[in-house]
Image 1 (tube, rainbow, N blue to C red):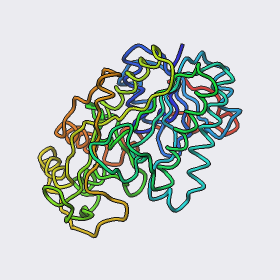
Image 2: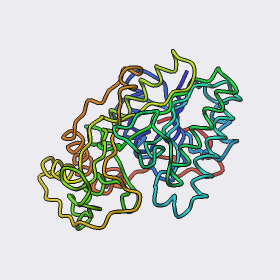
Image 3: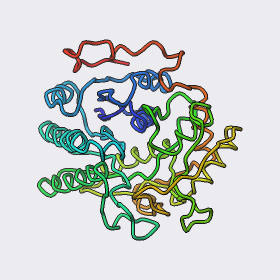
Length: 360
């Protein structure tokens, strides 16, 4: 039996696929490649020495989803697929509600149709909005303040309703804080399209000379150095949390939410300094005005994940920065680097046969 990974070619999904395959599990990847590259899948195979089936299918293509389930003996789903840029979600909210929420509805309908009732859902700390207290616990008030966050919260509520209607479902909701880093090999990592939305890839591109400087939004917060403090978690630790969550739902019925973070907050200036040490590069920056919605402090209380999932983050800020720099240095243009100019055959297939499986 296999684990279906939606968005398996993406940043977090690709790292989860590596850990799943190395743990001996069979994997089926579903991705529409709108914000990812098939090259990541080739590298997953190179890293693990394992083959797996890949489907170029959009979650909004319900017939395509049914085709995937009909061809594979799927026991559980790791659900990563979704649009994730907060700023874009404000500009085009309908695109986010349609893709993230309706796509998940279709996925759950097909799962139910085929009797697959185990899911680990990729949620986000954005469901907490502007948290009233830190560290943030799972029972903190849920008040998403942008369309992206609201799609995550709506999906969480949808999953609760599904379980209430059918208690055979087993669901783990993982609320990520700030994923950073890359695989230690430098083979897979974060490959943002256009201008990065997050701090770490932006810093990495400044260090690599692709961008002239970093903007630090606000330096007058009530923090130790005046800049905002966030909980950054290494993407490999995050991927391993999904394996623990998968084990958890195999043994426990119901639906549970877990914060996935380190429980330690780092300021923007601390991240800059750590990256300068890891890369040997100077990161020029300017201080800009605060952005609306930004808060001084945001970090997790990960005790629930530690006690119930038997998981905790192990990689520190130095590993986060070193692995990010290794990825950036080895792949200055992301997955479009010269060494990977040969694209996986998925991209060359006709859309008319996009639901056909490719063995990588």
